[in-house]
Image 1 (cartoon, one colour):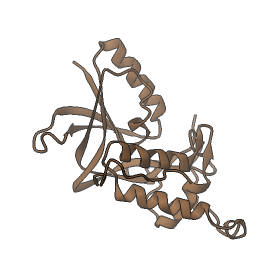
Image 2: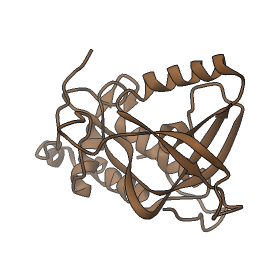
Image 3: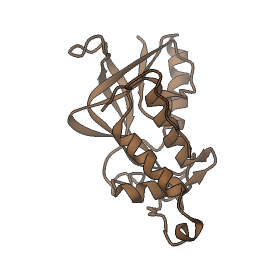
Length: 219
């Protein structure tokens, strides 16, 4: 028995655990959304960051990376313990089928674990829910935590999707809106209060048009 984990956020470029194989591909009927609060990495309880989670959407696909851990039970245990600490704001683990471009009708791996979150603000205190693009961008542009700022997370995701040649319009649009927020004059920024949803402290894809095409992934 081996462990497979699907990454659709920072796990794409920074898995952080020992793995034996990495595949680029996608899962079906889910889309990536920035609806989850992060209060211990790139945000705080007073000003949470917005990070990726998945939303069920029939017909959608979500590109990312699947990691295989096949070094035995102890290695699998270490990987899961690390992931459960890192992904502590996700309250669910879902089993999904993973596809690659070589065969879009038959999954190449089944029983792949993906960390997800319950889309309910009552039962899931980390769920922020959707918001207008400008409000989300303002929050991402200003949130900062122990591991860095929120906008770096978004820009790295944008670049990671470019690197695997499956850019996503939603991610690009949000990143560009964050850049607009960062370019605002200081006197205007002071008038714009971040849209914050406080969290209590607790103990599509699109192909790259050309391999030579260049884009800017930072502010």
